[in-house]
Amino acid sequence: MDKIYIVVTMDVEPPTADTHPTATGPDNWEDSEKFIRGYADRAGEFGCPVSSFIHPEVTVAQGDLFNELGEKGHCVEGLHLHPWKFRDGKYKAHFGGLSENDMRAAISECISMWQGGMGRRPLYFRPGTFSANDNMYKVLVDLGFRGGSCSIPGRIWPRMNAIWTGAEPDPHRPHPIFRQLVGDLEFANMPVSVDFSERTVTKGSNWQKVDESAASSPDDNTVSGHRDMRPDWSDADAAFYKRTAGNIVEQLMARAPAIPTLNVITHNDNDFTDPEDRVCKNFMMALKEMTDACKSRGIEPVGATVADVCDMVLAEPVKMKPFVYA
Ligand SMILES: [Zn+2]
Image (cartoon, rainbow, N blue to C red; front, side, top):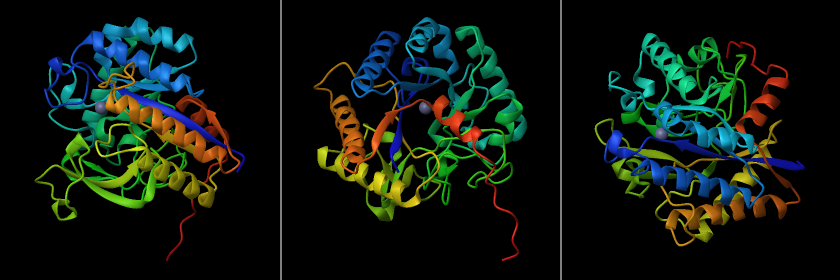
């Protein structure tokens, strides 16, 4: 393996004043712009463009900002959706809790609003909290999406309808019927990169570790999953990022996928312009450790976007496994 693609992504949420006080997102639009620009600047220091998945309302308020970032080489063709946050709150569900018809309706409405804000249609998708069911990919293909970052292998978060046990870990065409498997759809999915050597139980999206025995009942808000390189972890330090980046790269080398990719995620709710901000500090450590983990193993880290990765996946031959009895 001579190179690994580093894909830095951001889920761009509307301000919490417009959604819910405990939801992800900035307090207001001014902070949102500041944090988005800061994140792009920090990633740029490591040669990485940012791939944004943008909630539709944000395109209406900040379409010019994203079009400007697009002209600078960032990927701004991504749609992000938490159905319950969208518009008038008609969809009282997480994405994976929607019926196929409601998925179609909600995404169609999103495309329309997103197109109004950006002047063109979205091409890539990421569901809020990776909430999904088996209808997702075929609905996305039908509605004209060519790819996305729709999965986080190993996550078990029943309350959010986000269950990804056994999911394919590397960029691939998904299966039309069974979302965890490699398939033959004209769509490229780029999973979040995780460290399979560790499983952690956290409480909701505060990313605070809790006792394993608290996992994982649909009645509470515990999340069981593998660690990834997100800067949000509240218990992370330099040693964590070094260990996790090293483990992810070692596991990538062992799997040797056609398109080795290290995909990292966060949201627009921390001040990435402030070097003293905890999450900004974590992000700088994550970027350094991801690039160092490659270089120290003789691998070149190459900044890329979700669009670049999707181009490569769709250029590969179809790899769906044939049916076997047993
Ligand atoms: Zn989100």
